[in-house]
Length: 297
Image (cartoon, rainbow, N blue to C red; front, side):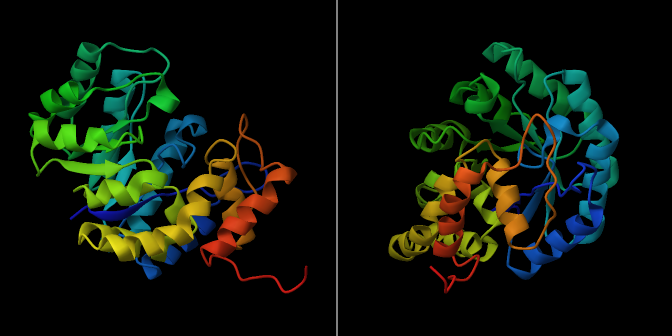
């Protein structure tokens, strides 16, 4: 079952920006040891926008191979060209992904009808479970609950990552699509409440840095334990905020490098985290127990 804390995994890179596949393997093992419930490869956090198609597929292939069936692997295969999204989704299916995550087409701003036809075309072309992904803050395009409901009728469209942070969407989509349609939060700051309201899990940036706590948060919230979920979320609150102090994945890659899990590689136009932001991210990491308290002032 693809529920709980699904990490939107970063794509490790060498300082010169080339892929660092050895670190990717290590990172996957870290997540499996820490209780992450599933891995999303090459989403926004995985810098899908600046990986070429071969690299994109290589990261998916290696992730599936390294995970070896221990948890589900969801491949990011969205594009703002429907034919490209079909090609990537087809490739992910051949590589053995458990499902695909497809962001709404960005930049070209399709209508609701255009969104419906885009997703239906991909779903009909490739027989693999598909998760819609709505993130208007990134795409300049908001897929409305009515459109989601139309798409929920397509057999292999199984759920949505809803990253608006608007919790009324949970209720609306549940009402329109029924309880079996999988609902994932794409907004760490509201994920606790999202899961308490019946969401199935979160596709998380914070889980990169604090995978164990994110997993425990999802378990508590999905069991309806509001008090425990609140206690856990209090430790994560700083990360939910500071991992977006500059554009994702700039802060999260810096944090993982601080933890010794990856090297200092990121691709232009993204840049390494500004010096002035280091303190805030480091404090959030301490609050979550991701790094130890430092003894010197």
